[in-house]
Image (cartoon, rainbow, N blue to C red; front, side, top):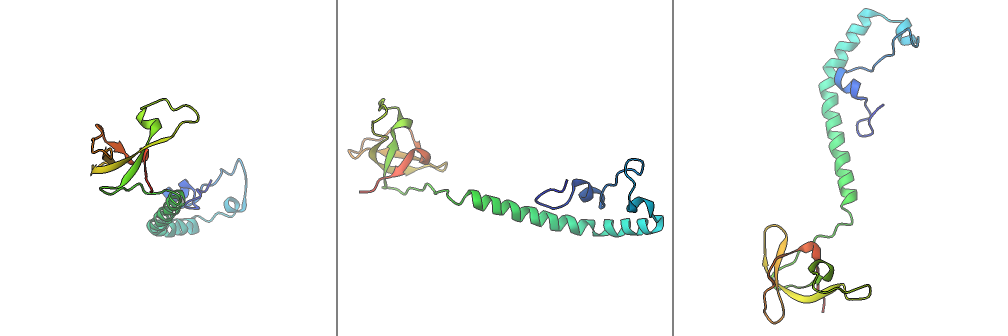
Length: 145
């Protein structure tokens, strides 16, 4: 079966030609009108063009992967906070209190005081009391006044 990304069968990408079912199973024009000299010439031409076909298929695969990545990342919002930004922290992630079904989902605001290289942030309360552990951006959201 041809692959969607290359429109080629794996067999043709390796050997430069399509596979043929043996004559005993299914006779067809390709087998009954076989010319060995013409077949050898065609195989040589296919093998000479094989490297170029592989390069073209490689480029098409890369384009297809980029299209898929762009489609999947279309709705991704970057989670970037700057120093001194006010943020809310997820109550579910902090486990400060059991909020129940109707309780608040976010707590804060907190101020970003340090940014680590791994996407986590050190926070402090408005009273300048530092929060002990850093928080990943996934558990934070921007606080708008």
